[in-house]
Length: 128
Image 1: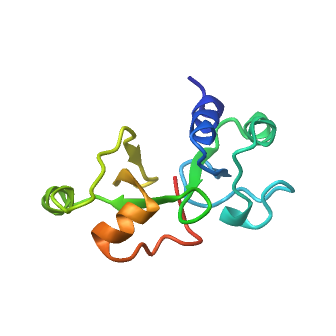
Image 2: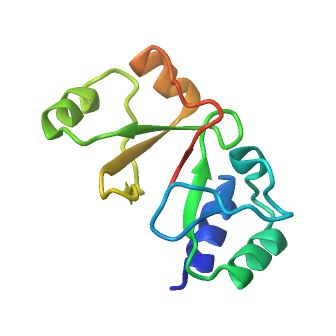
Image 3: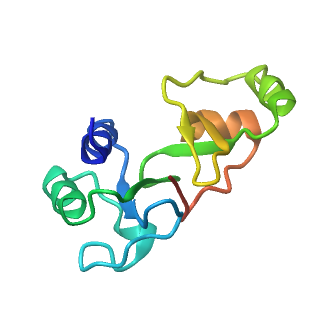
């Protein structure tokens, strides 16, 4: 699958995506996303245009209210196991990696994550 196909798959889940400069966390500045994660989209035509112009772009996923997601950075395996024991934890069917190869998983529905973790800290951010 091409990156555009992954971006379209994420958008079909209701997740807002944005094109990032290859191998970075930096949004590509274009007319379709002048404001970084605030311009993330789940509109297939916009996604096809972005990845048509930038086929090697990383895929960013807007977190917080935009997509209803919180991403937990799970670099420490011991911490990951402790978080998985929390009440309200929902296992993910998606395993993501950040630009520096850190594991970003699981993706949790925002309200459940708030109950499990206490606060999200995700508003206005994105995961690639």
